[in-house]
Length: 277
Image 1 (cartoon, helix red, strand yellow):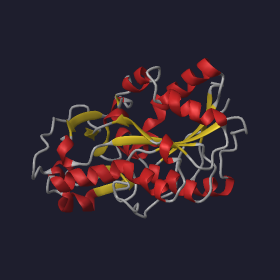
Image 2: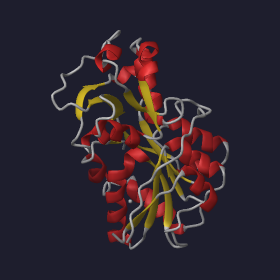
Image 3: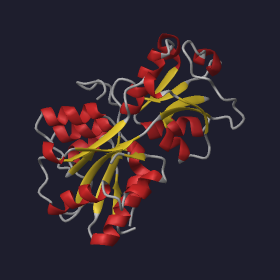
Image 4: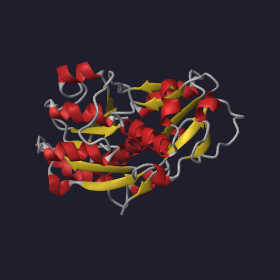
């Protein structure tokens, strides 16, 4: 079984709405251009459910796919990347069966384009965003209006996912704007293709601080959470899921139902997600 790590090329255009996983599964991964050329991961076969999922879901959704396989014998091929890149692949004709976004905006976009089956759409998870540090001894930060994050960086960079395209970056920019510090911080932001790439910049010490999902920070022992952004500084962080209109796999609906069932809930919760009932 080969395991491939998902990545994307830079995806700089903003969404139309800014608040816009072992035989059990194969991790499909290619660059954005390769996804365009291949449409679906080469590891996938006709009887596998092809799932396009936000990068922040990687650890949890791998466990869910394994549990689904154990219960049903079905196999899910999962491509993890930024929600914006995945949505654009679906728009370009990539034959995904299930799409799970890290924000409502990109799902809205696909629904407007008649690329998802609207009555299968559901909100499944919630998350929060946190400020992380590379230094294990970094002091806690109080996130209040006017907080001097630029000074905190001391000439270093703030790692974030693409702030005008990837949900984690969109939420982070919104929070910094709400706190009145975005204009000061923006020149020091190091934008990454997805939230896991931003996390890696901090984990490797290439950026002293970063903004990622709480679930990503919990999965990476090399970073320290120094603050959680107040919920009222950004739109609710909701993960909607739906079948695509291009699906012809009868197992796709079963996978979608399983991942939003009580059987899957503990698998998401142990990774720090809040399950929406």
